[in-house]
Image (cartoon, rainbow, N blue to C red; front, top):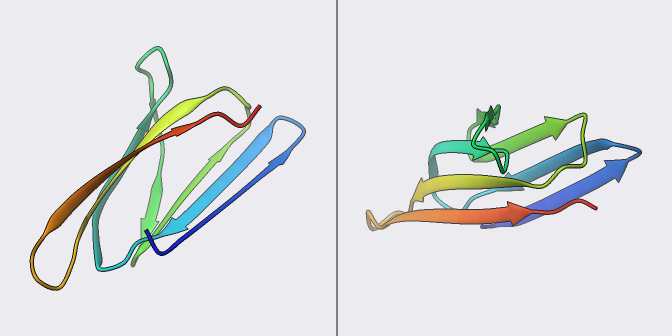
Length: 78
């Protein structure tokens, strides 16, 4: 991961991160398994939610030598 930024305003949560290498995919789930949307553009992932409930985010990327990495992030805003 190259950068990670997050903010909480009331119950609104915004997370953005950039990966090193090429971004392959990103997905997220609430604790009950309900999927949450993750927007991807280039090497950037953005998740915006109107709740401060915790969630899990997976980010898959590949570096220049072909090594694929899956990051699992447990995000607990409050």
